[in-house]
Structures are given as structure tokens and as C-alpha cells.
Image 1: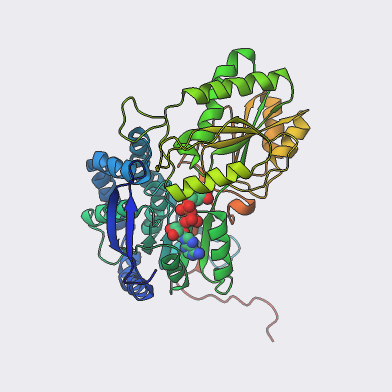
Image 2: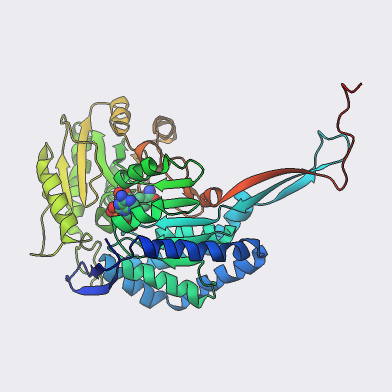
Length: 474
Ligand code: NAD
């Protein structure tokens, strides 16, 4: 997208235009990076307390604007208002959690240095990288970039943030909230645009890039960053997440179905942690569970963000995404249990869909929408093997079983989030969050975001030099 190109965003639930503005070209990106570069040294050198005052003022600004902010998120993403409200609450809650994480993960340690006979001290302190780029996705247009921005600012970095081209209005609102909190100019520049603007930002003279998005884009960024290994690259990507339901007690079938449906269909399946694959016992136990899941999926309300009664899920982000999902679902092998259908002509409302792929070779791709693939297997070893039959490694959950089975599942799952009797998409900012395999590059976010926002500096220090050479002198 060149500087003269326009960028627009639309409300997924009715197709109306929400935001219109210019896309940033390479010159605008370079200017934003230069402004960040100029603003960063004073910010990084300021006492931590000064930075924390601004970050806490941002929290207050978000809380003061919570309802209009939630409405904007709901309008631009199509997610139900109740869910957008939880996103805003997460944005505000991120502040105190990140302050605690900064102290715990990258705090200063100073003390005696026992290895030095002359009484030197040892210190570990952290320094900000400098200028960091943030690339955001559309599914949580506030909470996920915020999960990079807050810890990066606390650590003393300046940022250039490119929101998803599908959610520019939310990105712009975030910048306004920071400005109203008194964040000095230049420290958080927003550049709007699509992949081309993202590529320009990745190529610009930053000290690193914090990314949340698809595995394909993340891999492209890793290739681009291969030439600059001195720059930090944190990649939070997608998954093809398994949920194994095993030994579910008769009395727990309805609760298990709720955990499964929430895992698969929350946010219309547009969460990186959504369960894409349900693995159950072949035979009557698995059948009963799948029947309960289908019955519950039949009851889900799909609707517009502000509908009453409130919907469980909204549309997917746009018609392109809906068309892609419909084509991918149509190409999957197996038996349709509940079809993926467009529910309103010309709009991206999709039905929660369930497909039985038992014995089939389904592609190991993330299908980012309300589509759950069921696989029936003979025993738990086969269930574990099926769960791990993916190049991704973001989240996994076991529903049912006992502590021994869960222990086996936990140890056998190569993912960054493992849950038991709770949805795959249950995650907390108070814990690290990230995946392995094609889901991440071992730079987990959330509580561990502090780690990639600063680098440690180790020092051995004394007020005076000492006679440090003890042997080998003539
Ligand atoms: P995306 O990869 O298409 O886009 C993410 C961002 O990267 C956008 O700002 C986009 O403009 C930019 N971009 C796209 N191509 C680029 C390129 N070649 N160079 C530089 N920038 C580029 O992702 P999306 O569709 O917006 O978001 C959905 C994806 O995000 C899903 O795969 C989902 O699993 C993933 N996700 C991951 C997490 C996580 O924390 N692991 C959280 C939410 C979403």
C-alpha cells in the first residue's frame, strides 16, 4: 500500500463503513521510526516511577472510556458487546500485571559478589532495546497489541504500532488513549496499512518487532529478520489446537460439551487458542459426547454485537475470511455433522460447524473460524498421538479423565498452554502465553512479555580498582 492509498474498515455485522484514512508508505513509516528514536532516550532514562505514572494514567483513561471503547471494538470486529467488554477489561488489567511482571522478570538484583576476594558487588539490571515495532492482529485488536505495548513502554522502549488493516479504528483509539494519559509525543506512533506497510515497518531501523498474527506472516518475518540477528523478534502465532475428551463421567457430559463448544466457537472460532480438533473415544462414549456437542451448537445464538438477547458469537471478520473458510471446509475430507453455512446473504455470519474426519488425512492448517473437526480413536495412546500430529504447538486441553490421565496428557503434549477440564482458549495475563512449533519462537508473551522488552546487563562493580592478578606475575 503506498502513501496515497486509502484504507477503510467496515462493520462486519452490516458491511457499513466505519473508518477511512490514509495508509502509511515507507516514508511515513521511516518518519514514525525516527520520531520514536528521538523520543526514546529520555523515556528510557526517566525514573521507572515516572513511566509507571503514565502507564497507570493510561489504565485510568481506558476505564473512563470503557463503554465507548468496547462498543468500538464490537463494531469493528463484529464480536458480541459482552465479549468486547471483557477485552477492554483485559486491556486495563494488563497494566498492574505488567508492572508486577517487570519487577519479577526483569527487576534489578544487586548484592555481594562472593567470587571476588576484594569485596566487589554484582548487579543484574535491564535495559530497553530502544525502538520496537508492534504488528497486531484483528481478532483482539486492543488486548493483543496492548500486551506488547504496555510492557515495552514500562521497560523504557518507544514503539511504532501497526494495527491490523481490518481494525484501524481500534488502533487509532488506543493511540488517543495513550496521548490522553500524557505519553510524550513520538513514543507510540501508529502507522496504518496492510501487509506492505507491515513489511516496510519490519524493514525499518528498529531494534526489534513484536508480532501477533498468523504462522505464515510470522515465518515471513523470521526470514526477513534472518539478516538482522541483533534485532529481537517475538512471534505469537496460530495453532491447530487439539482437545481430547476422555473418560467423561455421565454426569459431566453437559459440562464437557460446554467446555468443548466454548473451546471451538468462542469469538466465532477466531481465537488463536480455539480448539480445531476434538479427539474422542470411538464407540458409544464418544458418540454420546459428540451428540451433546452438536445439541449445544444447535442452541448457540449467532448475531450482531448489540443484539438482544446477546449472541454467543458474531460474524467472522469479513466476507473474504468467510469465503476462505467455506472453501476450506468444502475441501476437507470426512462427513459433515453440522455444515458450515453463511447465515445471512452478503454478510460473514457463519454457522458453528462440525465435521467427522475419522480415518481421514485432514490438512494441518489453522482454519480460523467456527469449524471443529472430530476424530474418533481406539485408545488414549492414539488420542495423544492424534493430538500431537501437528506442526503447531499453541494450546491443548483434556476434558474428563483423572489426575493420572491428565499427568500423561500434560507430559505428552508439546504446547505452550495445557488445560484440564477448562477450554483451550482459557488463558490468563498473569501467566506466560505462547506456543512452540509453528506457533511461536520461544518468546512467550503475557506475563513473560517483560523478558523480550528488555535485555539483561550483568555487572561486577567496586568503588575502587583492586589488585586482581593474584598469580603468574614475575
Ligand atoms: P496476519 O498474520 O494476517 O496479520 C497480522 C499483522 O501482520 C497485521 O497487522 C498484518 O497487516 C501484518 N502483516 C501481514 N502480512 C505481513 C507481512 N508480510 N509483513 C509484515 N506484516 C504483515 O494475522 P491476522 O489474520 O490479522 O490474525 C489472525 C491470526 O493471528 C491467526 O493465525 C491467529 O491464530 C493469530 N493470533 C495469534 C495469537 C497469539 O498470541 N499466538 C493471538 C491472536 C491471533
